[in-house]
Image 1: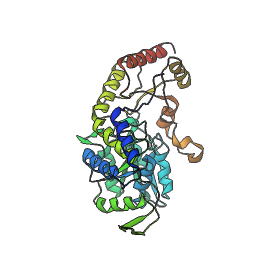
Image 2: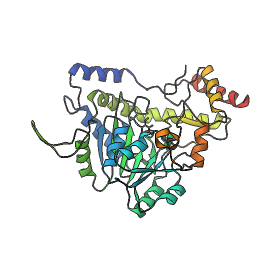
Image 3: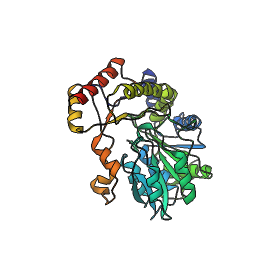
Length: 361
Ligand SMILES: Cc1ncc(COP(=O)(O)O)c(C=O)c1O
């Protein structure tokens, strides 16, 4: 079976993990303190002001939104995303207001943000869909007009570029997921990059929030100054992450080469555009009979996926909101693999199989 996702690992990650396991210093802050090393390296890589590592991407979104006062306020967010982009708003007492997406990029539709933003809005959450950077300049322009922060869900876009700078350096808080399927993979992990004028203070707040509200540690003495969570990154993840980070640009280049080939050779009208700035976490196509198509792909030994069934259509999040583009795309979208372990034969087989499925609809 050609897998949809597959971590791009070598002996180096295995050796790093074994070294930490043998050291018996597994928790953050102990032993070598790989977590701190990872934070420094990721901060430098992204060009962000500050970086705080956490236990996963959901935790990153939860804590990033906790930095801004969104309680009882509306937060604009796309529905075509993983549920964590939305649940993190509710964790913080905010009210998600779903916005539609641009049919070209599947990132938030700027016109719909302009239509839905009001004085009741407390923040804008944007998602870099499949690794395609959102239109951050426009989002920042609108956010500035309403004096609200921008939180970027960059779970798919580690290593992507916007306006010549890496994703991570552009908006108030940028949240990454290092889930094993992601472009930068760890057993479990996430990070928040900060660029706000108060980001030094925010970094300290996040460090306290990620570890039970603990602050002012002096030796064995400490205080608990706020309600916090147990969201710290472990040392095994951080040690693996440091190696993954070194290979991220090379791995993303392979993903782009594969995606460029899909873009030029797939005989499908509605497909993901090609951009040198995208990190291509996966490649999406739109097909009419999704279930039949996916069944055929499985039969030919190729795993596909659905990213995403819209959040506003899930039982818990159901609203009356109508999002015509998201709803249509939710019925048609299928993801195909772009991971760097694919061989040329795999890629050619994927193209050939998709094209023959499309011809014999
Ligand atoms: C867009 C998006 N946001 C948030 C997350 C949550 O990340 P994690 O699984 O690390 O909590 C994911 C992960 O699947 C994601 O794809």
